[in-house]
Length: 197
Ligand code: GRF
Image (spheres, rainbow, N blue to C red):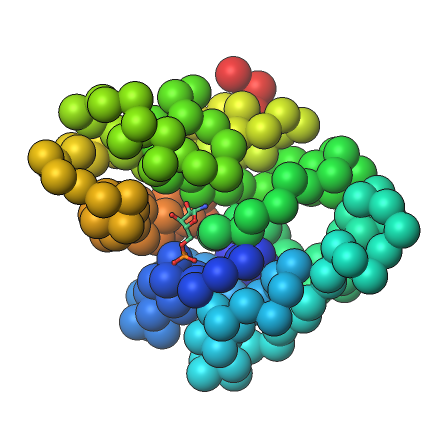
């Protein structure tokens, strides 16, 4: 049974999809803790499932590195097999990535390497692409540059707002993330092999 620690910053619908998958009884992973950089509304999903939560706010620290070291300490305190960033809107400091990768994955609402960064959906719309999508990847020391685990395309529809498109992406994303974690737990995806590509 793969133990997951999930990091969020917002509504946590991807987290909820993982929580619901773990509750089915035939999912090879369980969420042991949820962390955030703020008192995110998505933490309520963890509380509903009786899972411990923690908040490590960057503003409480003198530097990104100090924040990173505290975040890492909280994560390691749970000894998770896998850390999943699911709508975590901070760049992890090198000290965190170095300690955790490749047991550290992220989901991103674009077909990386296209549209990295915090505004992927807006950027795809602005670029006028007909197709965008979602990527689950191993986090490396770059920003949204780590080796891809799985990607899926999502069509952009005429008249899409950023919200419309992001919701359509998230419908695919939640399923893709749940399947990717299942594949990692079942050994179908080998993170060391993925990271070595
Ligand atoms: C997801 O699309 C994620 O890829 C992006 O932010 C969104 C978070 O959605 N970074 P939620 O908080 O899981 O609903």
